[in-house]
Length: 192
Length: 109
Image 1: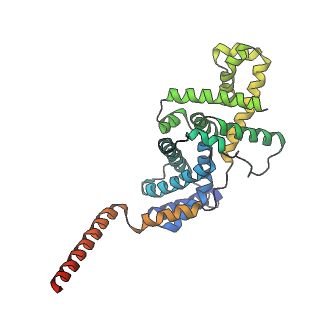
Image 2: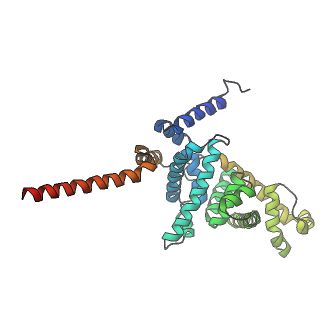
Image 3: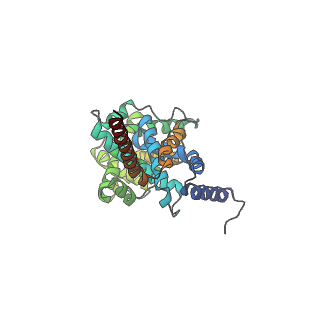
């Protein structure tokens, strides 16, 4: 049994209450959930699509989809995990839509994307340098490779989860990851 | 730079991130090659940094909450299933009113 004074337990109960209220149509409760989760949703979207403006659209649509799907949310998974899945699916949809409607290939977004991290608090010396290079190299990876690295090596998804959400086989997911890591290592070596 | 090192590089990277040994065909080479060991060490640090990125949060655009909530306005005003029948009813009522006005005008003229 959890300690009632445990801050994380209190947070979870508060979140559970907000979810229950939002499920019955309480807009203020949903706004509170949006405020609590928007940075996380935006961060994942930004890492998946690279471009900040596109990431903002993806985050907006993901949160709207979350509102629409909220009555079906049973609370088996954490809300953040559930939102991650919606964000990933929304990012795929946006990419497909962009491929259909834009003359500019979506991969070109990488060229105009500002390097991630300029707005981040300082982390000391070498770590900061490596992290900065890592963000830049991640942004330059082809979309399909960046997505698997983000989901597997940053967010810890399994090969099966990645394969399911991307609509590819587990083997294909492993191959993409293999190539992505090789390229990441090579690019980091070159920028060192 | 040895060709074997280049062939082994993706397997060295995988081993560093996943924490297992380098895949068999390159295991013996990677154990004895300083270049591959250096790459392994570098990729291990990279893997740690990648994992650390999970806790990093970028600030969402200041207007994101407003954009989300204002997008919901229409959604909340009416349940989605009611929208189409209501639109048809409104169209039918408008048409009936137009016909009625037209007939009244015909009668009066």
